[in-house]
Image (cartoon, rainbow, N blue to C red; front, side, top):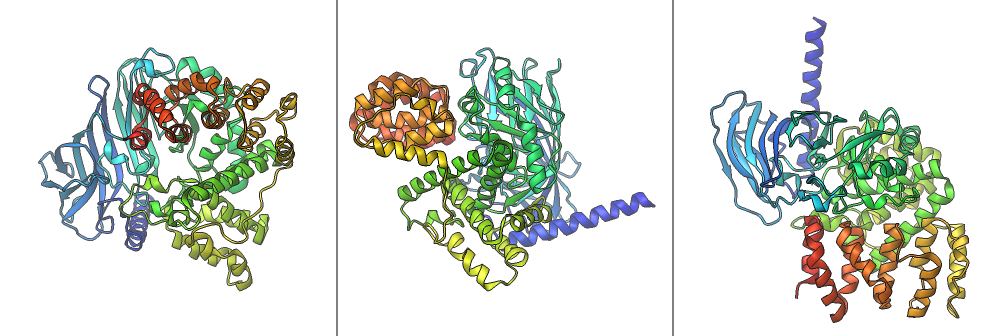
Length: 617
């Protein structure tokens, strides 16, 4: 009797959650999805995939458990570039009726499947296109080990639909199981419970028991090995990179402990990281249980591991509590940057966190200047309908979002702020929120009708107005103030000799590069390079910042290093500014095109699509 009672409770809870989700979607229609979740909604996925490296396709079936909320006669999925082979309903093999809508250049095509009020399962047999935007197929020469091919996916923001027929909206969550077949010399891993070693059959089972949105679906396949850091953290990498990666990320366990101390239990079981080949277009991607990271964070001195703190923080802000639409992207990233810097402060000290805050503020100012302070995209809450959501993934969401939360902290005090955030994550676990819903919760739980406090915080200006709000918290670092004084003295003559002994950290050196006078001569660049070795540095952050100056000042000593960097590294944050700077002159654009011709095959589509436009005649 107890068993049946529990089943009834679970069924009622599921119905209640789906009703809440349906109501939320009615209030916040996602303009980037064809799906109609208020009518029929996915709940669970059973995925079966075969990975074909020869033809560069994924083939299989997606079997969706659905909830027909309104006795609808159809359910709608998002697809882009998929070949739909057949569809069936429930547990039958009888083919179902379906229609594929007209193509939208951005959104792809709607897949509309006819159902009845009792339909609880839809199975779709399909295959991907070799040029699916989410999937990057690498030949052995494009990997670290040079022996085996590699595959990885990048689903954010709306690219999951290019390798999986799904309701591709961040406001729709589902659990999943998967069976993936690969060549036996390779290991597949997913945003799920993962194997740690290869088997002879090349067939692997995965389970993700926690509900996630489609943009967190992830798959990587390659010659991967695993090394544990502690009992719940570890690293996957190609064998040639594994030792260095495990050393670099040795503090992962400390970071998880710090995060839990701040804002409550880690709810995903394990927290592992996979180091991808250099073409990965982002610093990291917070796929649940398995963060995907760029090898550019492996600097050999643990100077760039705050990126791991950032991706870990997404396990709360983003993965646990998710932006309902891409207009609300700041809810994912602003909260995560705030959380990241609190972890960094706890593990590495206040000055380290302060330095990162100052660097973040500098990045925000650059973005504001680039866009223009009155540009609508400098608002936190965006209007991205009809546009690629990637256009909203700027430092505005990250850094302006961070400073909004810092302003809240200054207004109410850290103790109240921490209690508010801990409660926020707890009460909204495994839910998706709009900006408006967050504002309602903020009013109810933190501001509590205090008009003076509300006026001081000025939520309306922060969230819905462009530009820099009044009352932006001041970011100050003692060590950076020393660097400022050095650079001021350099306005007469650049004398860097001996300075490396004082500026030992990567953050200090990065700040110095960003503060270099605009009137540097080639001789000045030589002196600085002789002191710090920026051109030959193994730190990708320093390389990218220094190379910008080298291009501007025609410091041709760095040209070969710039070309090697651009052909090896695919991280958008680094390569887009370099190509942009090169393209500012006719000679530079010719050089950029020459380098790009060689480098483009190593880039992901989210990188080369931007550069194609940038370098077009």
